[in-house]
Length: 466
Image 1 (spheres, rainbow, N blue to C red):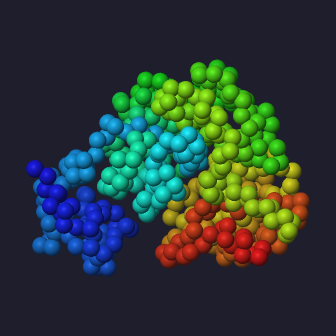
Image 2 (image 1 turned 180 degrees about the vertical axis):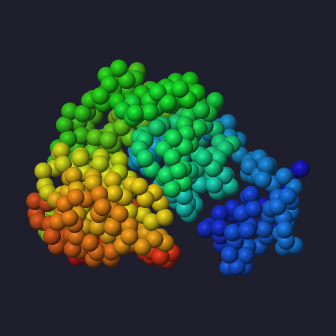
Image 3 (image 1 turned 135 degrees about the horizontal axis):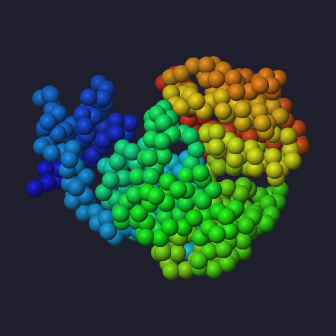
């Protein structure tokens, strides 16, 4: 007996995340989630379903065993056959979005239908399917997505966040292939310790159905990965260790972002020339190679199709305003590791002075703020500190924390208004300089004092230079 079937037939949709509620939805309360519904939320919903052990009001529809059986019941309702899927999950502090994007591009070029879920949204090929809010969505959201794509493809690429893994949002999915791109301190506001953060990511690799695992051999956690991984085939990837299963050698990166490199794999040696701008994107590209080879039995076509792929929006996005003699780079870098990689690459390959606009998010890991300030000082000629999704914190206080990591205060200019900070930076750079606007990337909003505002770094730059 499946007590949810009648509700599915009668109602618009199931929702378990209050941020995704629309009029007429049925809200499924997992672990007393209904207690967090606002008065406005309660007006929107048609029904509220909850486990009978948690019901404390007459308006609730009580379903015995809901918490324990929800995923199984929804799989039954949607007739989801998990065994048919060849899912690829990529985790890592940085690089998840780029890795999923690169793999999507390759599948598009070989003409094989795919679906993807991650920071940029939920897609069947290039068609947006759901209004995704989280990098790794909740189990109910994922199953609504699977229902829509399961008759079109068996190849689904997931970004697996540490919080999503820890909260068991991926439970019940077929975890057969995984990639681990990078690891550095992050999300300590949630995980509390780096050990807890790593432990969450390692849970993904411990899945006993794992066929292939690819990981960045240049991380300092390779022993932990090998100890915890249950994959039948494990592939280390490195540009330093020639004994890695997949070794790549960077030959050249030119001023237009083209990277020439050789890759040595168990399936052959390949030479490539790809416009990826930064060397760490080669790792993000290759992380899905074992999965690709598993699916198609060869790697040659992978390398044949990568030469014209491009970066996702907001990832080292180069805006070159030749008539204005301005060069601007938009990047999502919002962790110390990402900032270090971005700015060090710029300093090595592009000889311009680096001007930098950035801030740090509020209500998140405070420990990284001064560290990012120190990294900014190391590489940037001038630093423009500003707001960046300060949420419920004071933007001024966040900026002060960043500035505490910068010894040379003469390098700092402060304007909490992000648009004005970008304008100030643009007015400051010359034709031989480059401006980096970091932290927001593809995102088209900011949350300031609890209010969600429309804001796009790219659009602001274009507006300022119009």
